[in-house]
Amino acid sequence: MNNLELTDKEFIDFLLTSEFNDNFSPEQYRYMLHKFRYFYRLLHAKYEQITLDKGTLEMNINTLKELSTSKQKEHDAEIQDLKEQIDTLKSRKLTLRERWSGEIIHKKEVKPNEH
Image (cartoon, rainbow, N blue to C red; front, side):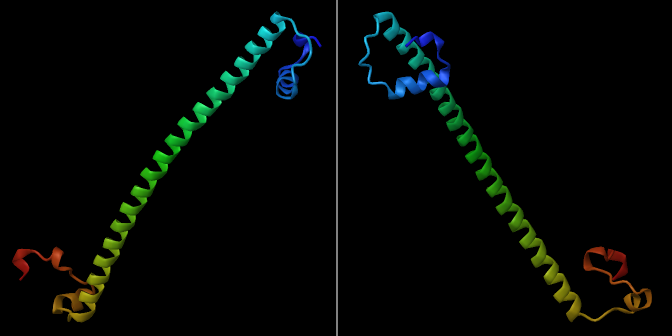
């Protein structure tokens, strides 16, 4: 077998399945070891990149969860305020001005001179 004629896929298959009982020269063993190191470095680099990407994605997910939770709390508070405003408007009587204009004057909109 001539190791130089194999593609990378064929060579890695050979390395993983061979019993190394053939009489290889020291140069061929050295070549196989160098190729094995090459494949190992490639796989290790891919593993490190995936690990780094996973950490970044987990950080992004946690940030989005926190943002979602805070937005949900803001919306819940806003809904509660609107419900309170509705309950307040339902229970109060309209003033003569509100009846005449057809618009409800909210307490926040009332000017100090209009009391």
